[in-house]
Length: 307
Image 1 (tube, rainbow, N blue to C red):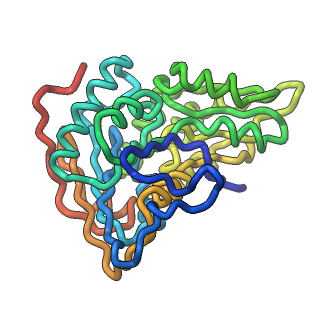
Image 2 (cartoon, rainbow, N blue to C red):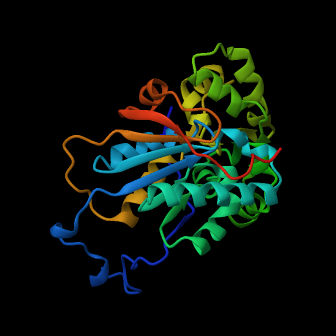
């Protein structure tokens, strides 16, 4: 069983010099001297706990960073919102978070949000934003059976962005889109120690395993950051072995390339926690994310979450 990282990462950088010129040479303006090294503040954002699957890789890549984890749990799950409501909600939450925490970079660790909100975020704020989108291109490039499934949320499945990725990169691959309504909530429940049966998980992923005259699915794209939190359970209940594509390592590499070299940090600072409905449990976040955390704080919003 191999778990591979997707290089298909939606990332943006405004107001920061490009790391390379058109000839491929390193641009002088992008090179930091040792004296300029500092510990960056990185905001990791999701609607719930799913972004912790990305945070774990970010923390490995950037032991020097000061991390902030923010969950918009008052509006979880984002897949239930219309496109207009989702964009408005994320923009509003980000206005409050950036004003309060002044991050050097933001990671939108949610496929559903990333397929919509990255352009308006980059237009509004002069800091780097890194997001993630379904890893259809690398999945199809590496599939041996030419049968690929994208395990996502309904919101990600119905996006024009996702359909465009299939049109541009699937080639002769058959791509099966599976929009699970329950898998992200099941992952949240399991992370909180609630009972989640193998049968419940198996029922949600069953449509991603397709067998026909051409062969059977050999690659499943994890197109929701909640899903890697259940990876052991997914492997256990899968009808047959597949490659599971988790984008988190590639997101970490992309972010690190944007914010510069690692500054020395012998003792990483505790992570700050924000949420919009109820305080996040520091013990739970430490167990999943592997880094010390502060007590959870509530981000007070001007308006209630959209219904």
